[in-house]
Length: 276
Image (cartoon, rainbow, N blue to C red; front, side):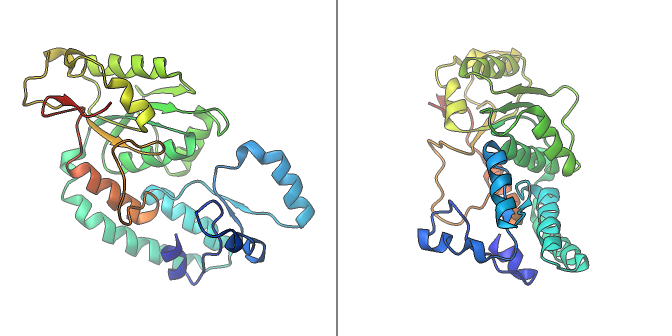
């Protein structure tokens, strides 16, 4: 975010809950533009009252994820800061073209893959956007928790990015772990899933599933088939840990996701479950 804003002549101030020293957060009030990411909805009424008393009104945004989501975020924030929209468009075009070039080489590998995505609505909307832009189809979306909205919040965010879920897509709102497991096994048994994205809480539900339930109608694992890919996102993660810069937002987030998808872990690697 800091790099993108700097290119538009803006400086990123304190980012609350980012792990920065508390003293840095105290300077937030001095920022000319306050940006509100979509995680404060549970405190909406109290926040509205507070901002009104302060004479401030933050700019509410979705997460800057995917090409469309990142461009929309930049346009929203830059407009609030009085940045010329032509500068924003030129920068977004340049960054998007740079990111798309290497992705185009792998597009045929991903086109048409059916995936399941689990996460709270803002994160799920971001990943659904990115996957759709890479040519995949989110056919099962599980919206974890209740405080950040449900299907309507997901569809509003996707619509803002110009993305629609496939007609056959199933959206589960605040599903129990048992419901998630049943939905995954049903789709896997029917051969209708090529990939899964979620936290360890969702992915590990398949850890004790027999191979006959993970590989579609053709039967058991034969050593050549490793099943659908699995990518841990959100929190908690059991296997995935970044030791360097691995952004999930912005243009860098698209490249990071693509890199992870080039050779992702599978449900069954070397005949053993890759989830636990």
